[in-house]
Image 1 (cartoon, rainbow, N blue to C red):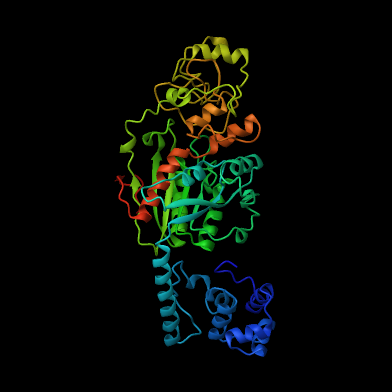
Image 2 (image 1 turned 135 degrees about the vertical axis):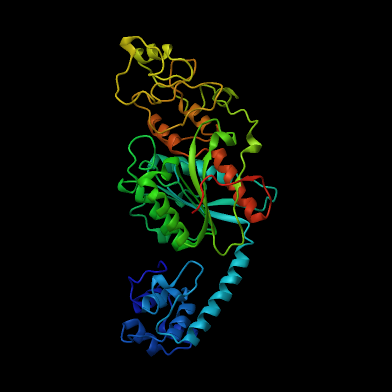
Length: 470
């Protein structure tokens, strides 16, 4: 049961848990030192206002958090609780009783926080996991204290090919830990407790490519499922990722609402617009990433500096050609280009697109409002690639700087810093979408390593956030 829910009467809640544990009334009575007749009255609903201290004893015996039964009994409401378990008011308790309860809770919270702050292995759950860009970065994050690491716990995505890719590359020994289903119908209670949580909630309605619908779109509200996980499992930290356009969606109101909801879950948040090309990634990819650390953790996250990566050769030529990609590598099928496309590409120079190149009349495109675009745009081999996307039709593939063709999926994966050993499942079109929707592995790794260093107490070079909190 999620803390804050009152959908189940307290008696039913207790009875269902007792029976699930195979515990008789007599055994529960002995465990909590309350008569079995009194427990029966509570379970049947005859006892309209059960004694709060009796409920706390029953909760302890049935391995509930006391708040669950106090909520169900109506002693407290969701608004009485925040994620560090401070009570605002218990109308049916005296001031003395309330002080006693709060002191017990405060002591337990402090004890738990001290112990949790010493966590070194973080079990990470993911919603909207994609093929595994974030997961690869997390599970390959390494710092000077090797005992600090991130391991996979569970993941969810709705696309079958994407889930197959994730299982193959991230958790091949635990395929059942990937729940391939629509998040709208996903039973979040079955996922399990985690120490860390990541969610790259779908960005279509926040992207600057196309119409920004924000919360009015199909995908905008999906971040709320991440909020539900934060409320239910209270991980020590989280990482949320979305496109740069998130900041301006709904005139900035969407971003403000998302941040408010994260803070309300009990976290200090550290949003920043990361330009991954500044971190050595061979691609101009700009993403808003919010790191959150739970309020009772004694740590402050700092934005990792891009300075250590300023001399990295992140040109797309180097990414694609070093080492060479052989024809027999997985996901390396070439796209068959039409004769018209081949002719058009021969006129387009590196860095140009179909509208900036000097094309003969018969090869020109007449698309209103698309003169500044990535349509039939060739890469500039000496610069990072432009943003890899999941699209591909209508000239929106990424095109090679010298050969008259679109990049293969393996070349696109190189630009997203996936290792060549990372094999994608599905058709060529499915793989293209998976790669385009992913987070660059190496970029994610840098941020996860900063989080591990934060918890390990290892200083690292940092910069001020470029998104300020008002």
